[in-house]
Image (cartoon, rainbow over all chains, first blue to last red; front, side, top):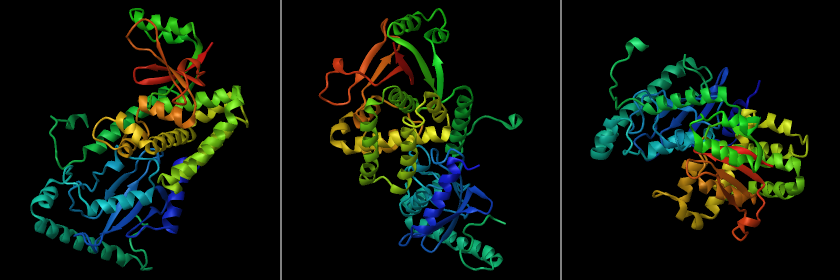
Length: 172
Length: 268
């Protein structure tokens, strides 16, 4: 049976395909519209540039009235990302608006990469380096950017079609 | 799991927000299992049972309500009760007396473009708007209270209706930013207030939400405040315009406020 959440997620997917925002992509996993895989490309002019960061987005039947749970699967080094990949971002918690869709979620996370908020740290080391030792911070970020490519190669080998690598598929 | 529990130690690397949200979901689930979104009719004798005989102030105030109101409906205590109670009660009043229906339909039909002009995303706004208008049109077809009760107890439809009312309030406050900035506490802009306190589902309504909804929809509301002060309920009428005299306004909707919660009242 289609529920409001599933109907809305189909609309979100359609919109994401027809009008894709720059630097992000996402799609439901093969047999579950409530679980999406997404990729955010590291924004230009940030230490995250050239990284391809994978995330999962898990929706409940309460979507869009309640936010989904979003998590980085790729290793991340960022003041507002916890060790388990979960993200400290107000619009995913107490400032969620039902008018946000998947596009808006992904672009908000993308801009969080651009502008970390060191005042509400989820990763103390990253927050401290971001404030006090930007060079070291950028070095640590560069390392996870490199790691994000390794993820691609692993999955790329399994992907015969070559296009849209790792987008829209569940982890093996 | 219980055997693994030990003294709580704060772990700065752990995301506690997710635990809090999971716990909140559990509480919401328990409430949802025991309270319908919009109940059937209750008499005040049913309500009086909620208060022990020692609770003289409340029992006295219920007697006071009986002199002005016939009965009431309860709404679920999920933080959306004001919007849901208002929405149901107003549409029900239009089923009984459709005088105001055309004006209201025209006003809410126009609201979509106004909200888009204010910067709300068209794609998602339309989703809520379409459902909202479908529900408003139920006043004419099928035009029965039974169907309206059914609709408002369908979580998906009912919540979409509430979302759209919240967007109308947010839009109204943003449009009248200069006026309402003085009523917002903390160092917040009107837009920030709306994104924190108006648009998210489950955020409770304050005086400012009621004022905004009343004026945005031009629907006067009466609220009977039932708290521990005094011996009778204090009635307050929110008029639909700044110029009208409260004593002349005939409210389209009457609500009962008990600390933290709104229910629907039916005048005698």
